[in-house]
Image: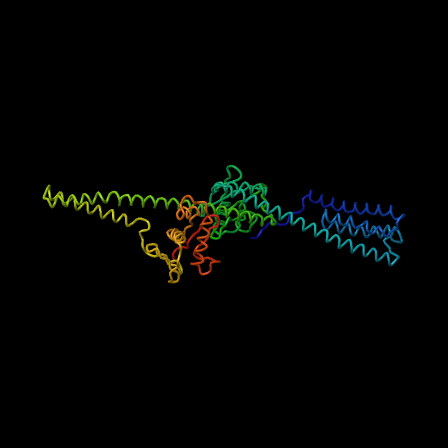
Length: 449
């Protein structure tokens, strides 16, 4: 990432504040000098040195290092001018006074550095706390979003508020389009769409303030998962300046990571719902085929038996009876073929790495040796094997293995998965077969070959 924008001159309000800090530091030194002139007739000049340390500390704590260094230098000069002989000059006649002035300057210098460093660390800690709070609040709002459209709307409005700029979310690799924006009727120019397409394809920053596609008015940042860019966030300011300062990039990247996690979560949930729908469809199909097998086939057998009886008795038209018998046989064979196509009819073992799962014979082999599983462990593994490569939610697995009444007992499932990993994985601490999809469910890797 390369930014073209140069460092801008300090604004007038910022310059005024810095000048005020220097003036305040000098005023505190002047106050210490005035206090020293008041106590010198009573206590002498020895205590005056200590009066100059509070202004230095205060300047470092309130205004930073530069005002503190000015206060240290001013304190040294003021002490030399007013409190060392010859007075009202910057000359020093006494070696003791010379040592005092040098020590005062060194102490003030070190003190200002330490106080400024503490102030800097405090500001960093406050900045990190504010940044973490911002990320946590952003993640909370995304978690409360129900779907991708709501995540997009929440994201663009939050980003626009946090960075004080306009924001859009663009998706679609083939034909990028605006999914959500913080303002109504946002239309991207062709150069902006080109920058968005570049970001979606490459997963890198592009647009305003970046050498790549710099003619665009918007600056696009990728919202990327491990595989590819899921979307691109466009940011722009009305004055045309680059929307994100260098010190804000780290925060923006963290927020975009939160967006990517939220979009991935919704995708997994949608896939889980699709799998659930598909599974219910298979269940319905199995029920219908079972109904055919149980209800229709006995009637077909009765018709065939009656036709054979009529043929033996020589009653009725023989040709018609033969036709009825032949057609009944064809329908019976057709129903047998349908039942053979029902889900789970395939008896071929499933090979996944060192694992072989034979659902037809209810056998599980690991590296050719039989793995002894409890009924619940086998039921969980069989359910995952029927949908190998796909994520099954906790509720799906619990409902299929333990029944609808135990859909909330995730601990049951975790115990079974842990036992399966101990028995089937080469390294249970780093599973390669039974994978966890955080906050969603589990997945058995797709069959090899």
